[in-house]
Length: 201
Image (cartoon, rainbow, N blue to C red):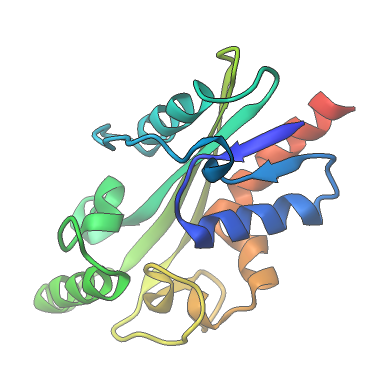
């Protein structure tokens, strides 16, 4: 099976490729550059699943017969902020915001709220779309809390300020293997891998 990842985010490509390889599946993994690049997609849906499907469908249209496009849309949902930043996680501080910009804005807003519940969840929706139009969506969530200052230099996005339930370290301080085992993306990937195992059996 050939699987094309519908993202230009090198971190996500690397992470997803590593998870598929660790599962020992007979799946060839490619980035969108193999088919001329990821088409421009406006992520204007109001859900992670909607945005993931939109990206996967756009890439699937360019693929050879029998291939699949896999798109990920994920983000951080903070309970005290009614689920924000949510689908706007990557551009919380503006369209061209860096990870630091977004994280700093989140910390500033929570700090301004004072003594507030910092419970949060990372959510991930993976959309798998075949060239023929078959669609599957796999979701995962990791619950935890937002800490008051950044800890750790690993990971990306909001990882330095998110501590998963049952841990004292942030996502940015965990090893890749630790993070894969409990992350939202890891949980969604486990569901995807289960589905792929059934298809490839």
